Image (cartoon, rainbow, N blue to C red; front, side):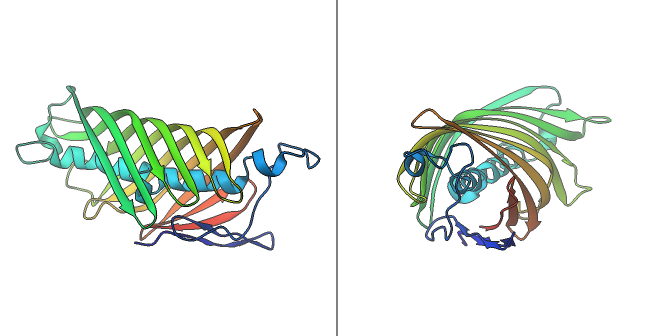
Amino acid sequence: MKNLILPKNNFNTKNLLVLGIAAFALTFTSCSKGDDDPDNAETAITEEEAAEAIALSVSPESGGMVEITQEAIYTLEEDNSTSGKAEDYECGVEYGSSYNISGQSGNISYDASLTWSWIVACGTGIIPSAADFDLMGTSTYDGPRLSSDASTTAAINIINLDNSSSSYLVNETFNISGSQESNVSTMNSFTSTIEFTTTNLAILKSNYNITSGTIYASFVGKASNGNSYNYSGTLEFTGNQTATLTMGSGNTYDLAW
């Protein structure tokens, strides 16, 4: 699997954001602190670190949002002991389950313990048309540039459950809150809350790849000296397990996994 987030040019600047084995080529600085702060280099949470945290919170190679969304679909398709289809769930009844996921991809390892509850909704008759999931749990990942220990909550809506469409359509909100250890430029410790809101993720039923859709990301971090840093970004899926992350500054990154 590829671990790279490859650079695009923006404002005559080249940026390189890499998941796993490679490193950033450029260091960004935050405008939340003045340049005359003697602790700026050691305590500031840079845009570079926020972008890395957003990317790792999305990537399936670190057990991120993509992996969790796919697990929701697996739950609908495979957890039922009869035929493994959403049609076997009774509409309007709340179901629940819990599971652990862990993995290793390149230089990144992850582990998560999650609990689901979900309800299948029907349109006309008894054929399911949508499913709503609520999720809570804890997760960790450990990479060469960033490590995290966090709690996760999510609400996931999945439609196109019948066989008339080749793709599921998913809208969801995620909240990931915890502590991070960064080695992006210098050793740095901080806490953060990352919120994701998605719009119309199209996920192929044949292989569960996301072919299109948008994630709006908000990063709020607190440095070890107590200063707060806010960043935002938009992640656009472009098919073939790729996406483009555009930060609020205009810096863009290509993701692949």
